[in-house]
Amino acid sequence: MIIGGVGGILVILATMLLEKLKIDDPVGAWPVHGVGGLWAGIATAIFGGYSLTTQIIGSVTIAAWAFVTCFILFSILKAMGQLRVSPEEEEVGLDLTEHGTEAYSLTGLGVLSSD
Image 1: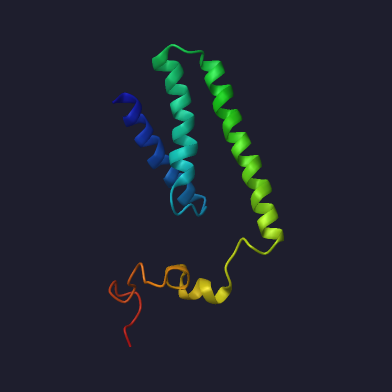
Image 2: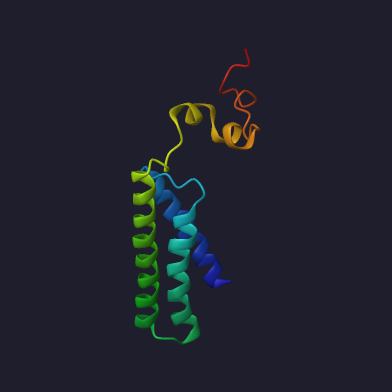
């Protein structure tokens, strides 16, 4: 319960940090997997009796590997023009252009007029 409680608090704090820095992470991948994963490695040392140094090195190595791999992949996709959708698709919304249905009714929320 302690590990989960601390992990939950860290995820909330990491999400708040991203919002303050104006970094878009719509699915919360970095707070959950990055920060939560780092905490899991540290918690394994604290509560499991493993070497804290080893757990930190391993956790940082995994994060660095993921960052470098994704940076290379997304750089290639950006160079190929495959990273972003067209401005028209962005305006309409990918829920409609990719899936053929409206995921969020903005008119029902009073954001857009229904005329």
